[in-house]
Image (cartoon, rainbow, N blue to C red; front, side, top):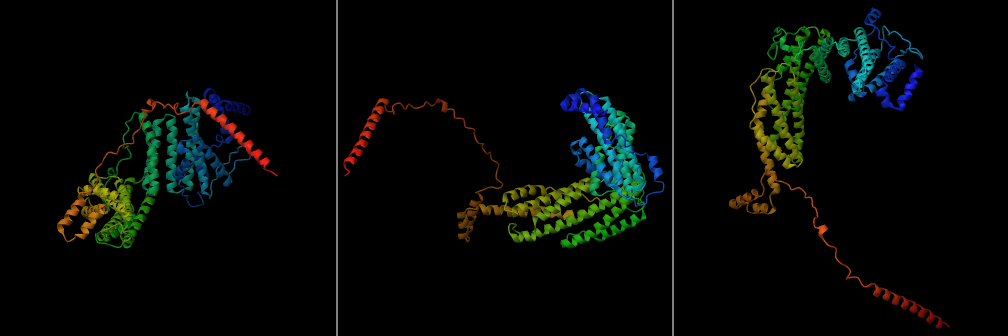
Length: 615
């Protein structure tokens, strides 16, 4: 086999395109020998029964917290899969597996591969990476074969069979990983391993065209990932939501081949209001009764609500540091409650009281977002009040007392918090309308502070243009009615902002226009106005004359493009005749000959006279 393989490789180096197109059986032999030499086929994963029987006594260490899905995402994005290069990723997995074997001293003989059973107990968490990397290598090999087969001129049945066997091996390693995580990992690690194993089994079933089983496995993966996204931090939640969206094309393929209609909502994933609404706590989330399964969480949540009720929103000016400290305490308490809720959700699992815990988590998260919004709106209100004592934004003293860029930063934070609040589940039409009005108010405030930034830098036309646009927008803005707590607390602060904003915009717009007119006023008009200040008639005439010098904003006018000039007269110009200006050739030659003779004679005379003159 090795001799035949070397001969095949020589043909491949001589003509690689012919090797891939006409000698597909040689390509299969190349892959077979490469897999044999790298040990991909011989390293069989242990079965779930063997793992459970070996670990009957239980581990001697604390459960590992292994972020499995995050590790997979980082490895894939850093080693080729960002560009769908599965060969590069498979090579990385082989190198990574070799390093793990060496560092963990879990080697498989010298020279020829020798199977060694997986250790029953271990203290290093990196042992869990071995089945993970094995599964990733088998999956990437299957995807590589599938891609090569799709790009080939003729479908190769051998490649397809090989890719299905690779997906089967990946699913086997996924089940081995799940069994190891049940023994050595914590509850979250077990849920991530379950989602990962379900994905590999779904891909394998889809390749075998067993679409019903593939749909069940992929739906299980989607359900666990969505549940984990609720019980995670913001960064991990965004990553898990993106992971669930990646399953949508494969789920549509399964439903199409099963003859089902592709609905947006699945049967087992309905909205939160489908659960039994039992008002056991006196709280409600957007009109739905809230049942808190844990008394510990209930006590902490009521403590946070008491702190929130004690902190009344007000429009009186306050110190920024005091505001940040007061709201910071409440935000920390809500953060601790959310962490406890996430831990309880992980303990319950994706098959427990998911509807109740989802509503409790959404209720706490909504209050946490509203507390952050209330703090930022209060800071924005204080910043708006600082503008009342200023008349000119171009001097350094005004910029020291009120920095416009700080207002822009507050508005950016408010915009992000409002977007997070709008993305929460069970948003009614009234809530969506109210949040849209709040977002518009924040955008208008941001435009005001951005215009002031331009004015402070001396860019008067840019600032005046923004003020003109904002002047037309603020006149039409109206806030809808209140929608109840916790958005009612925000209504108390956004209402005064929408009331004072048109006045502030008109005031600063007039100031900027006056500064522009003063800058463009001619010197003669200024001198006439200053000299005859007592004469009201002449002053009015000078001002009216100066006012007619320019109009703001200036009207649009067309700018002529640079023309393309083609010299059409140049070919018609005749060259001048220079023959009359030139002397005749004969006369010129004769004059030159006489000149030469005279020169020679003069030279001889001077030499002879010099000789006769010597003594």
